[in-house]
Structure formats: structure tokens, C-alpha cells
Length: 106
Image (cartoon, rainbow, N blue to C red; front, top):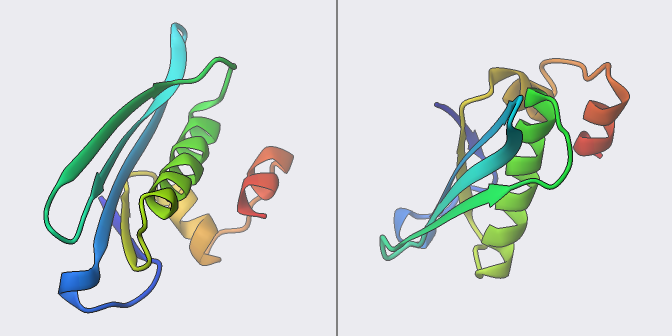
């Protein structure tokens, strides 16, 4: 897993976000786990009702995970993600070339 630090915080304030998107011939979706500072895990499995490439599914997972973490009250978040491409694009190390990837970054 690659780690993305959204905001630095003391360990007792830090929320954790683990996300993974996937796309197959049968459909696409996301797995999301939000861990509160108290150690409680909030687990979600989401099936998308639209076709998505694997990279689009990865971005959808990240965007949905970030929104869900925000809605649950997370202020300081440490995100773990298994897509090196998406992490490097978010960090600015890789340039997004496809229009859909550019839109996700915005």
C-alpha cells in the first residue's frame, strides 16, 4: 500500500482511510475502510452503476472515501491506496494525460 498524508496530526487525532477500486467485465466498485482515532473501523463495499476503467474505479474509490471520511468528521486523514498511478498523479509526480484522470484530479 502507498501512503498519502493529507494533513499532519498527532496520532490520537488521526483518521485512517484505506481504499481500493476495481473494474472487471462483471462490473466495478470500491472497498473503503475508515478507521476513527478511537480504532473503530467503518467498512463499506460499493458497486458502481456505471462502466469504469480500473483507473477510473481507483479514482472513484478515493473520491468517495475522502467524502465519506469528511462526512464522518475526519479532520486529519492518513490515506492508504494501492494504485501507484493514482497516488503519483495526486502527489504531482506523474502527469495525468487522459481527460477523465484530469477531471478526477480537479
